[in-house]
Length: 169
Image (tube, rainbow, N blue to C red; front, side, top):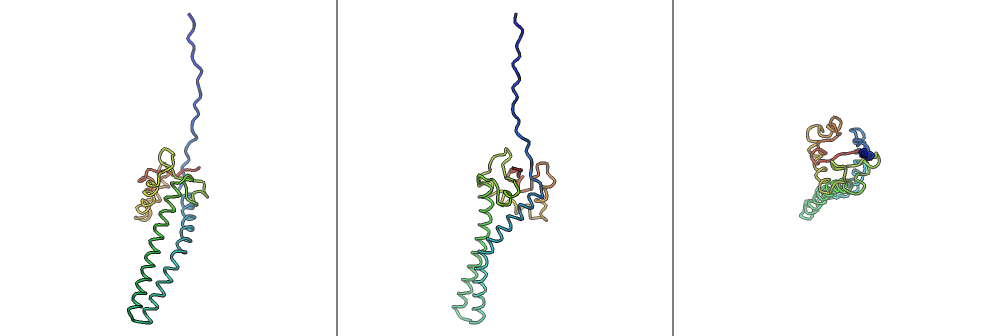
């Protein structure tokens, strides 16, 4: 009778441990992104603000129907600029975080990416939910943001709501 042969053990490679991005790294990335968004908003907002000033100035100088029309047009331009800024900021974050880079410019600069709970790229819909979840994170003294410093996987409230992780690349 031949002795029972034990097959050799095959070593299964283990994935490297996930390293979560901490509060301060995320905070600096956010500052970088806000500078970028702020510059873009400035470029969009200033012409609208200038038109509003011209319209109001014309209305003060001349009380006529054409002046009222100019004021209303200036207010409309101002409101359009605000809408463009809000939509632009949403698209910046949602498109960048759902792209193949998985990060905004600020996150890329600090070597962090946004993933789902399995480490995969997030969809545009999930990135949109994460972006609008930031409103909730900031509602009460930004406690939702500060949660990233205290939760096990360094998740802010908007990350938990959208089932996302922010990890080191």
